[in-house]
Length: 236
Image 1 (cartoon, helix red, strand yellow):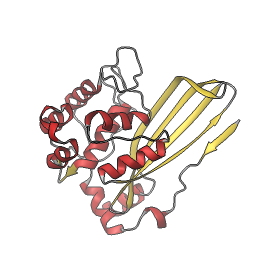
Image 2 (cartoon, rainbow, N blue to C red):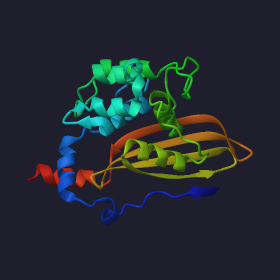
Image 3 (cartoon, helix red, strand yellow):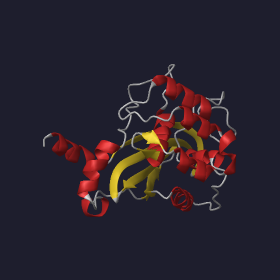
């Protein structure tokens, strides 16, 4: 078995630079949503709900979407932009939930778009792969473009475009029958690693190249540091 890439190594000195801001942000920013137990219409919306949380984290301000920021990044066509209209209608950010009707509407917004990779032929469930994050911003933000064939470079361009601090790590292994890939996006707010967005996929191995995807999953969750600090806040 051949291993490649690197996993992020927890290092509190590098990942946490402002403990007071971290304590404040835990209360100000929305909690991750548990994707393991909540199914919609017998479908698991792990990618869709993680992506919506990511959008809310980026554009959220005092429990609402900062529509001016969204408008600025979309450009002149914001009035006819489906994403802007969705965020305008669903402007409130719930801290620990995303209501079922909002999740269903969000899944519908992402369905049947020629830019995404989907799980099933009816183009309803988006595959939980990091490339679809780039596809999302390319589709809904006409002013965002990337040109590199390297995913790290493209994500760096995205985070520069969003003026948001994230770091991407990728690792995996290749066996005779399967290829496994794991990508982790570490999300920083005020210099602190507040969230981790994890993707993993298994592919058929076709001459050491990725073939058909076998299965995959993603989850946006708190970073490894948060639970301890969250407990310390509640105990004070």
